[in-house]
Length: 415
Image 1 (tube, rainbow, N blue to C red):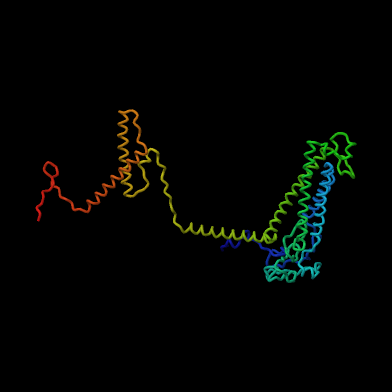
Image 2 (spheres, rainbow, N blue to C red):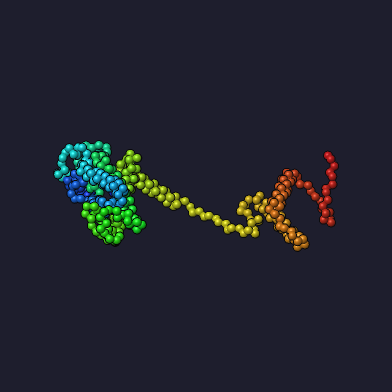
C-alpha cells in the first residue's frame, strides 16, 4: 500500500487558527473559558511583571543615585524632564491597563463572569462570519477581531500586548502610544545622565561631589546615594557596578522602545494597524511561496522534457598562430583565410631572408599586414569575377603541337 508524502506532510502547511487557539482537532470542541476584562485580569503575564520591575528599578536608581550627583543647574533640568516622563508613563500605562478594549456590543452584555459557548470547528471555519461572532453571539463591525487570548471581540483591534497583558484597540490605543512615547523620552534622558556621571567619575570627580553632604566625607573613595533625603555611603566599586548594571539595562530598554516607537510611527504614517500589517505580510509571503513553487515546478518540467544539449568549447588559440586560425567554416571565408595566410607566410619568409643580409629590418607592422590582406582580398575578388564571366562563355579548343606548346586554332572562314 502506497502512502503519498504530500498528503502526510503536515509541517509544510500553515496553520491559520481562529480564536481561541485551543483544540487541536477539527472534530473537537474548543474548550470554553471566561473572557478577560483588561490587563488586571488574572493571571498576569511574565513580561508584564518584568516591565513593572524595570520601571521601578530605573526610577529608584535614576532619581536616587545619578540625578542627585549632577551639578546644580543640570540636576533641576534632569529632575523635571525625567520626572514628567515617568509620571506621564505611569498614568498612561495604568489607563491602557484599565480600559476595556472590547466592542460596545460585548460590553453591553456584561457577561464576563459567564463561560463562553463552545466553538465547534466542524460547523464553522471562523469565529466571525458575515460580521457575526459566534462565540460572543453579537453582531460586530468590519474592524472588529476576536482575540484568542482575551477571548472577546475587540473594537479596532491593533494587537495583543504582552507587556500590558491586554489587547490594544481603538479605545486604549492613545494611552498605549502615550505610554510608549513617555517611556522612550524618560529612558533616553536617564541614559544620558548615567553616561555623564560615569565619564565624569574618571575625568573630574569633584564636579559630582557638589552636594553639601560630601563636605563631611574624606577622599574620593566614598560616595553618597539617595541624596538629599537619606544619604547612604557606598564605595567606588559599588557605585561603578551599580552604574554599569543600570546603563546596560537602560540601553536595552531604550533600543526596544525606539524600535517599537518607530514601528508605530510608520503604521500611523501608512494609516494601518499592526494586525493589518501582519496580515499583509503573511499574504505577501504566501504569494511569494506560491510563485516560487510554480517556477520550480515549471523548471523541473522543462528540464525533464527538453533534450540534453552540449556546448562545444574551443580551446584558446596561441598568440603565434592567431593570424591563421578562423572559427568560421564557410567556403568564402576558408578561401580568404587560406589566401591571407599563404601571403603572410611568404612575406614573413622573405622578410627573414632580408634580415639575414640587411641589419635592422623590422617585421611588417599591423598597417602593412592589413594592406597586404586587403590586396589579397581584392585580387581574389577580381579573379573570382573573371572566373564567373568565363563560366558563361563557351570553351575555346586549344591545339597542342608535338613539342607540347599550345597553338591558337586557325581562323575559321566566315560563313
